[in-house]
Structures are given as structure tokens and as C-alpha cells.
Length: 94
View 1: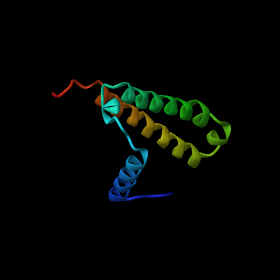
View 2 (view 1 turned 90 degrees about the vertical axis):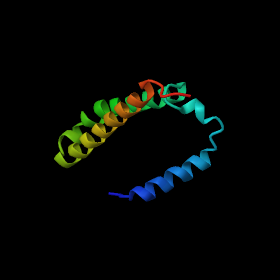
View 3 (view 1 turned 120 degrees about the horizontal axis):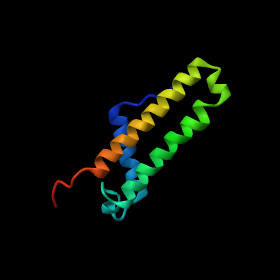
View 4 (view 1 turned 135 degrees about the vertical axis):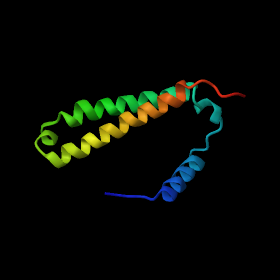
């Protein structure tokens, strides 16, 4: 299992953000179409893990693999909930 520290993860995020060269960040803020798009992708991935991985016979037959796939599904559902909470939150001001 690959484990990264919070500072390493933040450095990766900042490097990816710089490489992505996001010209209009407001198009991806909560409440925007871009944020809704991320919400939708998280939902689709959670559904794919649920229907294609958790229900797969190779996973069902192995308790370790099932536990790991279940954990991934739970993380994706949690991510979906977190994005949704930010996306649908009341605006805090200008």
C-alpha cells in the first residue's frame, strides 16, 4: 500500500494544480457546473465500484479483497457527500 503524508499529498496537489494551468478557477468553485461535474464523477465511480467490483465473484470469494473494495467504495461515497455539501452550501458572501 502506498502511503503519503499530508504534506506530501499537498505538494502533489499543488504540483498537479500548477500543471493543469487552470485559467478560470471560478468555473470549478462550489455552486458551479465544474463542481457539479466533480460531484457526478464521484457518484459514477462509487456506483462502478459497487456494481462492478464489490459484486464481482473474484472479490466476493476473497475477504481481504472485499474489505479493500468496500473501503474504497466507502471513501468514494464520503467524497461524494463532501463535494455535495460544499457544492450545495449557501454562499458565504462575495
